Length: 395
Image 1 (cartoon, rainbow, N blue to C red):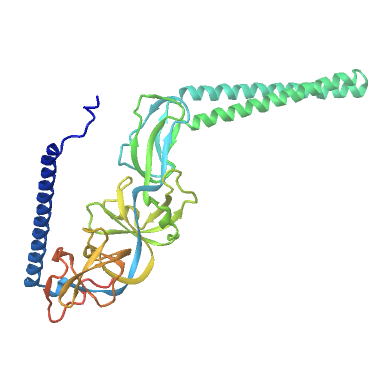
Image 2: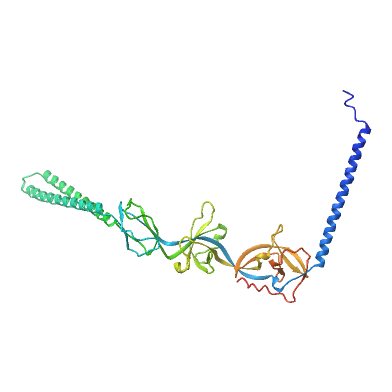
C-alpha cells in the first residue's frame, strides 16, 4: 500500500507538461490569427465605406418638421341595426299564411302570419257563455235580495236572512266579474293568433314553415330596420379616456375604397371583465344608403381623439433591425444612426406619420426605400432636398 501512494516519477510527468505547453502555444496562435482576421475585415469594410458614395434623390430626404398629428384610436367591429324585432308566436297552434321570405320588405302593423284560430275561437265562445250564465245568477241574486229587503221591512223574515241573500248577491257579482275577465283573456288570445310586424324593415330570417305546430314563444321571423345602423367596438382602457360622445370616426369596409363616416353615439359605463376594454357604439351616417353596408359586416377604422403638435417622420423611416428603434440621418454627407423614441401616430393620405423624440427640427432623415446603410456611408446629396413634402403636413 505505501508503494501505491508514492508520487509518480518525474520522468513520467515530463510528457504531460510538454503536451500542455504545446496546447497553450497553439491556442494563443489561433487567437492571434482570429484577431488579425477580424481587424482585416473591419479595415476592409471601413475602406469600402469610405470609397462608396451613395447618390440620394431629392424625394429620399425627409426634413424633420413639427407637425399637427390628428390622434386616432383604432377600432373595429361588426355592424348591427339599432332596431330589430323577432316575431314570435304568442299562442300555440298550427302556423298559416306565412308567405314572407328573407329579403322581403314589411311595414309596421303588417300581418305576416296567422296561427290556426279554431281552438281559440271555441275558448272565446266558452268564456262568453260562462260570463252570460254568471250575469244571470247576478240578476237572480239581485231579485232575491230586493224581495228579502221588503220582507224584512214588513217583519216577515229576520235580518239574518237578508244578510245571507246579500252575501249570495256579492258572490254572484264576483263570479260574473271573473267570467268577464276570462272572456277578455280568451279574446286577447284570439287576437294573438294574428302575427304582425312591429317595425318597418326587411326580413332577415324565416324560422318556421306553414303547417308546423308552433309552441308559445316560438320564433317565426326576424325583421331588421337598416335605416339606422351602428357599430359596437371595444376600446382599450388606456385609449378610452380620450374618447368622448360626439367625436367623429372614419370607418372602412374591407375591399371598399370609400370611407364611411360615423360618430360616437354612446359609451358603456362598464368595462368588460376579462379584457377590461370599454364597449362603445358608433352611429353610421346614411345607414343602408351606404353601398355594401349590411348587418353583420365587419368595419375597421379610427376615432378622431384630438391633435398633438410634435416632430414627426413617416413610420416606415423608423428602423427596428437593432436593439432600439432608430432613423438614418444624413449628417455632413454621411449616414448617422439616431436612436429615437416613438409616440403618437396619424394616418394621412395613405402614409402613417409618427411623433419621435431624439431628433432636431431640420435634420434630414433617409426614406425607408433607401434601405439599411452602415454608419459612415458617404452620401451625395441633391442641391435642394425636397421638403418632406411629397407628404403633406399631417393636419
